[in-house]
Amino acid sequence: MPKTLWFEEKSVQTGWGVALHITKKLHEEQSSFQKIEVYQTTNFGNLLVLDGFIMLTERDNFQYHEMLVHPPLLCHPAAKRILIIGGGDCGSLKEVLKHKQVQTAIQVDIDERVTRVCEDYFPDLVTSNDDQRATLLFADGIDYLAKVPANSFDVIIVDSTDPVGPGMVLYATEFYQSCFQALGDSGLLVVQSESPLLHADLIEKIRANMTTAGFSQLNSYHFPVSTYPSGWWSATMAGKENSSLSIKNRDIKIQNCVVFTPEFYQGCVLSEARLKKLRELKFQPG
Image (cartoon, rainbow, N blue to C red; front, side, top):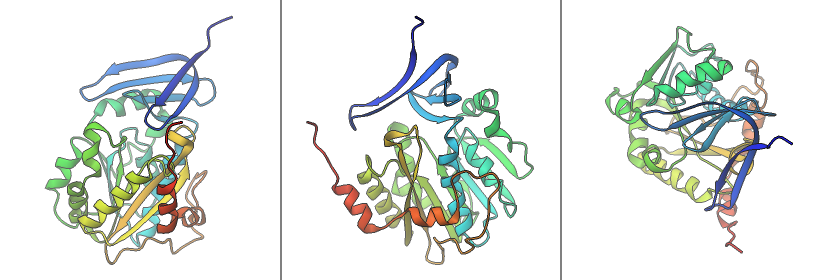
């Protein structure tokens, strides 16, 4: 019998792992920043892996991109100027540009090779890259934000890798202060904030850093992502004093969404009490 091939991601720290049945490796390279791999799977389409961590599959990436992007764009009363930090696969950019009121969408990712690889192996994600409202910059997002004038954006989306190594700076108070400065009076910041089950302490730290940076309103909300750690993911949205974290128009429909609806988002918001209970759900290795 032919050998069965699996891509496995395992975490000793959390005691969690996932495996996807693969048929072959389609691409591998070491960019200036990270190792990029693409695999063909039997049931989840093509799989993108960065430095050994699953970033997305063709089958389930909508769960992440829809829930990261649409809540802040619909909570803001007039989200016209959008900045994406990270997001080199361009899935978030695609969702942003579904909104007709968006006038400019700037994506700043440090690694151009991720985008070029996705153009070859994930064509559905890059369909909006040629939209006249889109600008793709390949640069350090932290340096970029430090130089933009105040009140430059209505929404900032941080579509980043996990908070390990160099990625930690995108979760620091100093970075959130730069975001606060760059946002307008009703501006909103949203960041991916890992698994509520496995990383509840990290979510608490993110929220504390956002508050220290000046944001006075916070919403953490959860949603499924089948191939991410625990299968349960979250994002945390931060607003200024005049911001709204609720979607006023519950009847709005976004083109070709699978999981996101305004009602689904509102039902996924994690209260302080629920976050506290999640932090208390800790188990010692047996």
